[in-house]
Length: 306
Image (cartoon, rainbow, N blue to C red; front, side, top):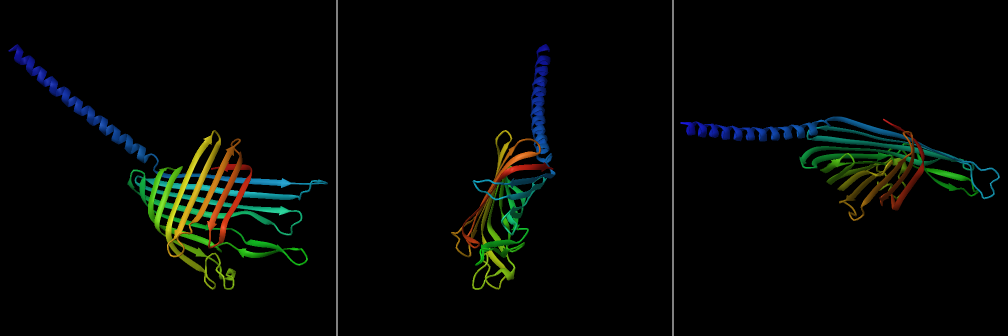
């Protein structure tokens, strides 16, 4: 009788332990699922981050035998991100705007040192892992008139208006696949991308194309492959490097001539409000210019983050 009771007790104990282990496993699994769900949803909603920079430079010479020309220049720039996330939906937006002027003592005109407006937007629906089905839009233009400078027969400086706001303007959009590891590392591929070049008909030159737009027209349409990449990293403490690359190939005409737009932005932080900034941008677009366009800006900047 005692043996039977002991065996029954042991049997009940084994069943209890087994059920307890199963319950423990279920608790662990449910906890892991809950933690993952919390991690996936805590970043839901809007995330906004922006920075305004102002660069100023002045050179003044008085009886300086080595030569030089008094000048003053200033640049103001805005870099603003506003991104949205809701479970498996992501929407990344970036606004970049900058404008700069240079005035020298012996020049009759103020000249631009920078003029840029660009808006990027990528909407993504999660597919698998870090991959999203996406639709993107990119728009680029400038704020003010651009001139070609020269001299007349008397040596006086002249200028001829060549570009203006929305002339040219570039609108690029299309579906694709978006790979996003984080806000600092993402790549977008769009194999069926439409690109529209917008110009003012007043700027079209006789018997010549203007930024690829034929004489008498105001639009040029292209269909091609587009790829963009964004990578930001901290090189060392207080020194960050931001890389932005855009590539485009037109299926309809000279697909081997790939348009390239690469920007490198290095920020060396001195304190909360002062940084040293280096910006290098390289563009290749044979419809605008058969060669590389480059610009470089370097200087001490006053920053305001928000």
